[in-house]
Image (tube, rainbow, N blue to C red; front, side, top):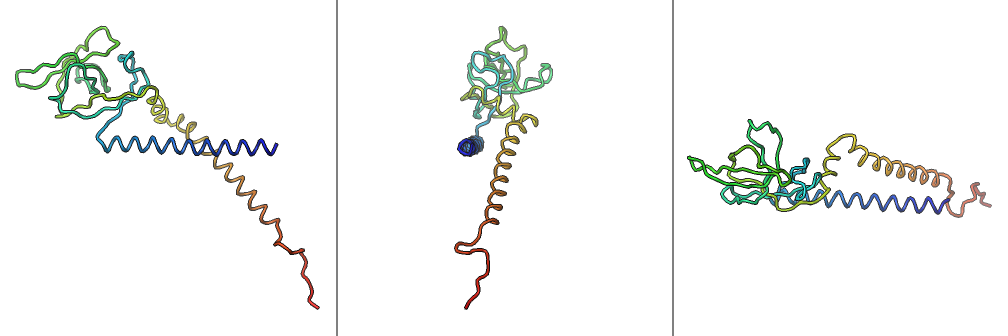
Length: 192
C-alpha cells in the first residue's frame, strides 16, 4: 500500500510540474506574441469549416490596409446594419475603392455558399490578417473563460496539491515531535 501511495504521490508531483510548465509556456507564448504585435482569436462558428474548425485558435498580425489581398483571412466587426454584432473571421473575396478612394472589402466564410451580404470599409490604417491556426487550443481558452470550467481545470488540481502538501507537512511535524535527540534515553543522567 505504501508503494502505491509513493507511486501516486510521484505521479501527482510530475503531473503538477508538467501543468506548471504548460501554463508557463502558454503564458510566455501569449505575452511574446503580444509583444511581437500578434493577436489571437478563437473560432466559435462554423463558417470557416474546412479551413479553421470551431475551437481553433487563429494567430494574426497587423498589416497595412493597403497591403490586404484577395484571399487574405481577416477578423473584423461587420457594419452596424449587418445584424452581426460580434467579430467575424472570413476570407476577402473582393477589394474595390469607393469614390473617395477608400478601400471597400467583401468577405465570405469558406464553408458558406454565398458571399457576406455587406460591403465594408476599415476605420484603422492596419488590419489583423491570419498567419497561423492551432486546432482545438481555442476550446481550452474558452473553457478557461468560464468560471465553472476554470475552477474544475485549475482549482481542483490546485486544491489536491495543497491538500497533499498539508498532509506531508502535518506528517513531518508529527514525526519531529516524536523523535528524541540521538543518544538520549529520555531520562536525565546523574553525574557521580
